[in-house]
Image (cartoon, rainbow over all chains, first blue to last red; front, side, top):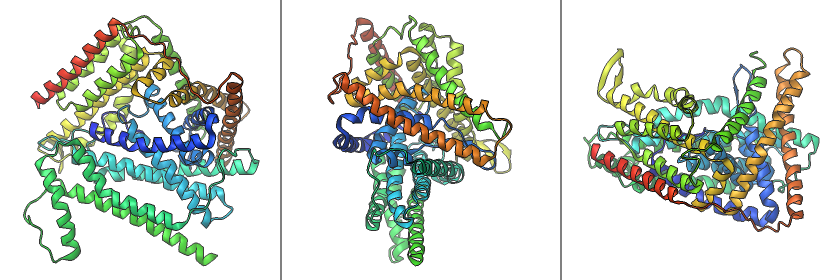
Length: 323
Length: 274
C-alpha cells in the first residue's frame, strides 16, 4: 500500500503534503493537551511497536501471507490522533531507511494510511460498538476491515487520476499509467480479499487478547459510541468534497491541456442532462478523451459512498430488529 | 515449509531490516565525497534532485539521471555492484511488474501486435519506461542519501525542513526502539520455533501471532513509562531540545551549487526537449 516515488506527479504530492498538514497540527495539539510531557516517549514507543507489527507475517487460510498495517489497532490503543502521529513517524522512517514508500509520495502515503485509516477505523469502531455492545473484538475487526479498504480506495483514486490529469500531448501517461477503471479493481480486489482480512484478523485477535488478559493499556479512554448522525454528516462532507478535490488537484498544477479543461467544463452539463433530460448538451458531437475517466471518477466515488451507506443502513436495520 | 512459511518469513524480514541498518551505518562512517558533506545540505539537495526527477518528462534525461547517483556512489566509495543491487532488487520486481501491463492497456498507436486486439502501443511503451526510469532515479537518490549519511544525523537534519523539534525527538526515539523490538520479535520467534516439532494447526499459529503482538504492545506501553521516568529523572520538563551542531563548510556550498545547477539545467533541458 506504500506508493513509491515516481508514481504521483509533483502536484499531487504537494496537494497531499498540504492535506496532511492540518491533521498533523490538530494531532499535535490534541495529544499535547492530553499527555503533555509524556507524549514523546509514548508516541515513540508505540510507533516502534507499529513498525514492528508490520514485520509479522500473518498466514491466511489458503497459503497466502501478508502483513497488517495496524492503523485501527493503534487508534484504539493510543487514540485516533496519537495514531496519526505514530503512523506518520513509522512511514517516514520506512520511506527514509527501508525503501517502503517514496519520499516525495510521503504526504500521500501519510494521508491514506496515517490519516484516513486510523481516523476512519476509530470512527467506525465507535459506531460499530453500538451495534455489537460488549463485543469489542468483533467491532474492532470490522472497523479495521472497513478502514483499510477506505484507505485503499483513496490510494486507487490517487493512482487512477494520474493518467487523466498528467499526460503528454499524445496521451502518454507521465506518472502512474492506469486509469481509474483499471486502478480501482487492481488495488481494491487484493485489499478486499487479502489485506483486509489480515488487518481484521490481527486487529480482532490482538484486541481480544488484550481484553482477555486485562493488560493495563489505559492510555486513552475507551472510545465512546458514536451518534449515527455524525457519521452521515461526515459522509455528506466527503461526498461534497469529491468533485471539488478533482478540480482542485488539477488547477493546482495549472498545466491543463485544452481538452482537460473542456472536459471538466463539459462534465456538469452532461450530468444535468442525464438527471433532467430537459437540457441538451452544448457540444453533442464532441468526444472528450478525458470525460470517461472523469465521470468514472465521480461515478465510482458515488457508488462507493452509496455502497457504504447501504451497508451501514442494512446493518443498522438488522440490529434494531434484533434489539 | 509452506504451512510454516510465516515463521521463516518473519525472521527473515526482521533480520534483513537489522542487517540493512548495520551495513548502512558502516558505509556512512567511511570517508568519501558525500559522507563528508553536511547532512542538512544533503537533505535539501537530494530533495531538490528528487523533485526535479519528478518534474522531468523526457526519457533521455531520465536515463541520464540514472547515472548521476552511480557516479556519486563511486566517488563516495560505495561499490557500484552493491549500490545497483540495493536499488535494482526493488525496481524490476515491483515497478517492472506494475508497469508491464501498461504496455498494452495504454490507448495509442499500436507498434507491434502480439495477439488479436493485444498490441504494444507507442504511448504504452513510453508510459511504462517513464514510470520505471522515474522510480529508479528517485529510489537510487534516496538509497544513496541513506547509505552515505548516518541515520541519526539524517533525522536530526530534518530540522532544516522545519520539522518540529518534538517530532524529530520522537523520530529518533522510535528509530532507537525499532531495533529493540525487532530483536525481541526474532527472539520470540526463534524461541517458539526451537520448541516446536512438526507443523502446528493454523489456528494455533494465529493465536501465537496475536499473543506475541499483544505482548509487544503491552511491552511498548510499559517501556514508554519507564523511559518517561528515566527522562524525568534526568531533568526533562517537557521542553524538547535537540543537538544542532552541524556546520556548513565551503564544500557544502559547492555541492549545493552543483546540485542546484544540475536540477535547473535538467528542468530547462526537459522543457526544450518535450
